[in-house]
Length: 148
Image (cartoon, rainbow, N blue to C red; front, side):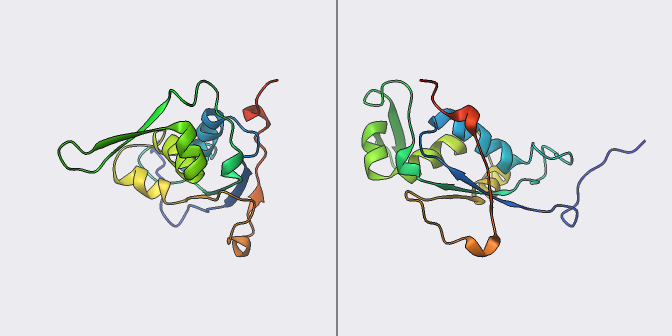
């Protein structure tokens, strides 16, 4: 029996919309990364991009567990001594889309395949997005809600 390897013509990509209002960051990021990688499909292959497109709206209303003032997000300019850090509370106030992008990026493969997968992620701070023409399907992530 031969091993099945999906070809680019076999892959059908769908569009999903996730409303991040009240969702916990880590739980949201794991589900989004799973869809971007294509692990929810039967034709999943770790060395092929079989994932779908994901649109995350209301990124400014994400909930973070833990102490957001103490958690730091790091960036490096590429020059010696170019490491800069920002608290997640500040980053969430200034650039909420970057918080979700960094969390999902850490859960994707390193290299060219991960960059292609991350390119299928669209994050918006508010409830509006310009991808109505793709007719995205609403994705419910009730397991990612904060238990309170």
